Length: 255
Image 1 (cartoon, rainbow, N blue to C red):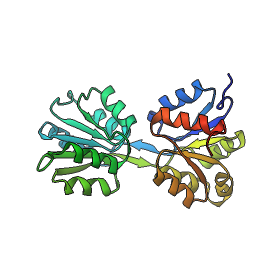
Image 2: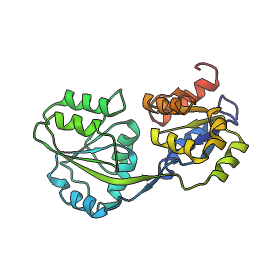
Image 3: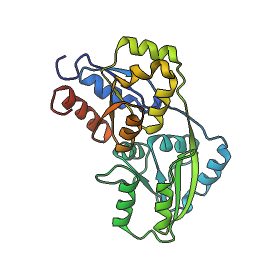
């Protein structure tokens, strides 16, 4: 196969369960896509809290999911069909597609800016949330900007940890093997993943990792990589956007 990604070795660092579509899209363009998950997704420390929240789900007007991991974690514990009257709200196209694939018909997603600010702006456009019950499903220790923004809009909000984010399961020896095999670019999907990568090998691998090229779909992740001394290219959102950005970069159309 010919094309800008032919024989390019690209690391896909998403959690294992979320990597399939991006790996397939990269391979369709001729890339050698390597799974190197920098986050492991585990059940919450106390699943009983999540279960009790799910029992109360039909009373909510809105269920907010911060990521596909949150959707998968909720549906792993949900023992009944999704209540049709409950609208799901998500921050990006990947989560929107996952929500619909899981059988949620009513999905709110920002049309352009794929982050908490974009979702809050879309909720402002729709209006009518004052005193409505809402549940925010996220990982443990998530950021505060979204729950603060939701409460500022008058929502009666419950925040629940649907999953835990753990360091990667592989060790530094595997990292050295992947570095030795070569890496033309690494797709980083969260700031936490960037931190795990640079902490994995300590100073012994830092300089080598700093020499790699990274691709990330959000300025916050770009900033996290810059703090580690690494250069990153901002991609479009979603799998198709990421692949398109990589193709244009390796074709010499963007830096």
